[in-house]
Length: 273
Image 1 (cartoon, rainbow, N blue to C red):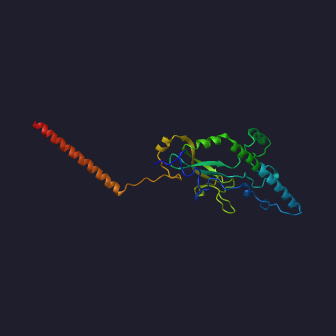
Image 2 (cartoon, rainbow, N blue to C red):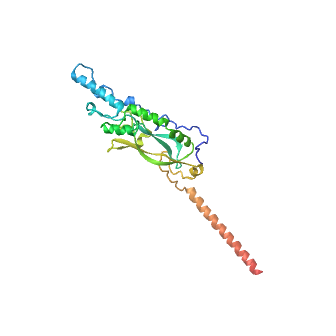
């Protein structure tokens, strides 16, 4: 029996919270909680020259965090500055044609293209890092929210999805998939995330939208995967199945014998005439 999809009625069109999931509202990650406090970057109250230098470095740190997401001057060159944000997969609540849950990939880490390619070239000419700070990240989020393609995808999302498997980076740029302070889960199904020592990041594989297909194509596609994307196990024949098969064969043989006898009787009658 085909599962309800598209415009068919069902209990909810939104993904529900699951023990291994993060719910339809997305990741609970917040950049503010991930921002290092003054004490963590060495800022301290005092009237010495060293304390004043530390305060100036702290100002430089927060300026770079807001604007660049990386060190832009000598004051912060020794600080571990990285763009704040998180990338993750979110269960869309729809089923792929192969039976797996369909996910959507969200990029919450700024990419540096908020102000366009011209500004990117100007930043490179001045030997400054790309604009991957909190402020440019907000502009990127606004651009993404105003992108008409998102509305079109939402409209097309009422159809029947055929999916493809992708591997993407998840978590933050520091290699965390949970809050390092209280252990809050930031991504869906963290047990499936694989750590790459070469990049210092976590990666996940999930099924995402490839294209929409019609209902008949969706229904006819073999559902070879479980909702979590793992292959379904082939069902082993049962004893009753073997018995049924043997009985079916016996019935077929008996029918053939009866037909053969009737044929011989008919042949004998015609010979007598």
